[in-house]
Image (tube, rainbow, N blue to C red; front, side, top):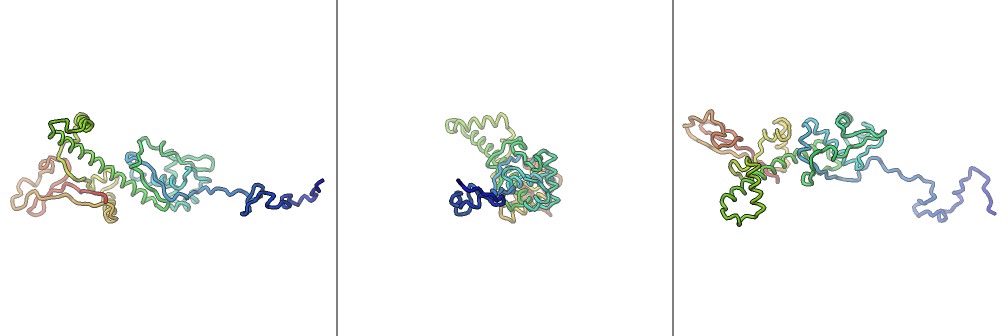
Length: 301
């Protein structure tokens, strides 16, 4: 018979060899008395995250609230399971590198708009699919790195809105080009059937797209950009200047001379539309010259 251990202070596992207990060389085994390591609630193992967005989703936020949405995206990148364990504004601010005041302000915005909710002591982030009623596409994704601050995320969203505006202009230009090509081609067999049907559809449902002159450049002025971003003209101008200095875009002011000399009669109160038949652009006078500015051409490098 086996000898019983009478001393209650003695742990029976102390008399079991590591090999009998099935321990590996690292000291871990089935009968190990060590606790399993607890996974850290804050997971920054992902260096970056690509989040599909919609330009219309971004524009649905007021410009002053857009930084709170950037804060939401940063949390989505940092917490892959959308759960912040044992939420504390002070602890969260240290982990993501945002000040305590801004963290509390943005969290209050998310809670007030039902973009986040509490589950016990944990803060849960609502899925972006429940926030957005717009379809999200991969081509409108923004890349968020773990060290990006809120201004950098906001800048990425503004770039997305600018690209979306340029793409819409490209769509209109293609429609005008195809319509002009269709007018010049009498024999419809020279044109693909799908393209011909597309032109007929645009002529019927979007006739305004094929009106006006055809230009080979995209025009986005500061005033127009301020409407796209929903911000002030000064903020839009600083944004464009920042992109140009960073060599993200190239800008060129499209301008020219209407009349030069002493005879400038009749041009003092004339509008750009009266001269060119377009609703955008403006005319101004410098000395004896009547000049026009169509807008600013923008190209991404």
